[in-house]
Length: 233
Ligand SMILES: NC(=O)c1ccc[n+]([C@@H]2O[C@H](COP(=O)([O-])OP(=O)(O)OC[C@H]3O[C@@H](n4cnc5c(N)ncnc54)[C@H](OP(=O)(O)O)[C@@H]3O)[C@@H](O)[C@H]2O)c1
Image (cartoon, rainbow, N blue to C red; front, side):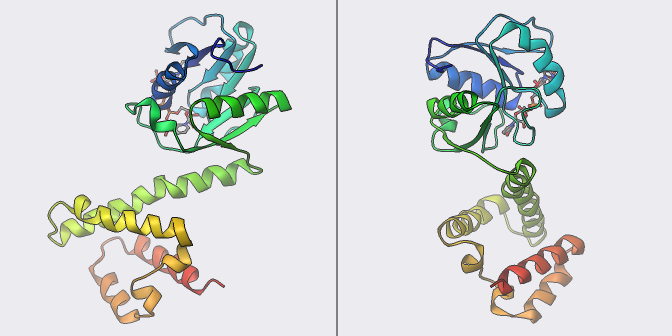
């Protein structure tokens, strides 16, 4: 099926991704129904796009199937057991973003058949995303967690320490350092971008930092991982 704007897409799930995806599909010119909430009955459409928690995908796909020609989901971790195709936008969404949030980001796509995969790729492109395929979903999804969720865990630790050190507006003060680190990593990779006491082999300073840190478990784990990175061939 060619995802021309004449195609009708019903978005199921009015959560973080479902809300913004609905707006973006509308902006791209598709006939969009929804986002459907739990209690709403399923209308007839060409495509059902499931934006529900991963655990709900089998049941929601089962309900949607008789009303549409194709069923897809937007999960990064879930395979194609219950759907025809998947599009996983590689971005974090809160639901309040504007439709252009999809412009220029990647989307992992998959499909049961070549046609289904192509439909997923075309839908991704219609929203301004660059489609790509993955061979190992769990590893791919873990990569996304490292790049987003775990970065936030580390940044929260930085914010708390800066707060304890008396820095006013710690997020504002730390953000340029974070942005520059991300930019350097994007351009040259982590090993080349690494600076600071571990990169310099300054163990005295690392030990002094450790004394000041409350969460020594997190600090020790990160120091060990950073040493491994520094020593990597
Ligand atoms: N948010 C992101 O950053 C992001 C990024 C990429 C991919 N995704 C994917 O997007 C999907 C949804 O994630 P999310 O973050 O948008 O989750 P979410 O904010 O929790 O939204 C899920 C929505 O699904 C609804 N729902 C649950 N069961 C349903 C049912 N049987 N019928 C209709 N609606 C139902 C929930 O309604 P209730 O509130 O009533 O339970 C909720 O509104 C997941 O597959 C996730 O992997 C999310």
